[in-house]
Amino acid sequence: MRAHRWPPAVEPDELGAGVHGPVVLARSPGIVAGLRCVFAYTDGVSLPFVLRAEGVQAEAANRQSFSGQTSLDEIGPGTSSWPSVAVQIGDHEGLVDASQAGGSSSDDVYDLDANFWIDALPADGRVVVTVSWVQAGLAESRTELRLRPWTGDDVLRLL
Image (tube, rainbow, N blue to C red; front, side):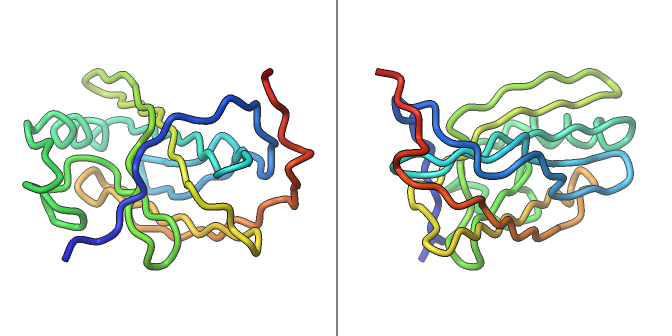
């Protein structure tokens, strides 16, 4: 049985409400991952994610990202051949897939910007984020975020 995966989703037609500021999720020599902020929406939470690697870690990230393995069924989460950073929400809910992702790379710098979407609002205001990319030198790290309380009135609508 496969682990649950939070699917990528298109964000709603809302501006959202800022419920957490920037935070570093994981840091190892030459590589760091974090969130720019956290936005709450009527039906979920958006996590704008960034990762930057330099030097040897950038070389490893480039090799892993462009290894030609892209099928999740082929690779499977948590295996040693996982080709990119693994982001897990909660203790058992599973890995998240990016709704949007982009970045750039060169021989000595690797940048990744991604947006992760959680289609469930945490009732207690807590979101646990676990990040790892052992193959690129980023050790696993678990961070518990305590989101600022918000209501539907806090979410700004575009129309």
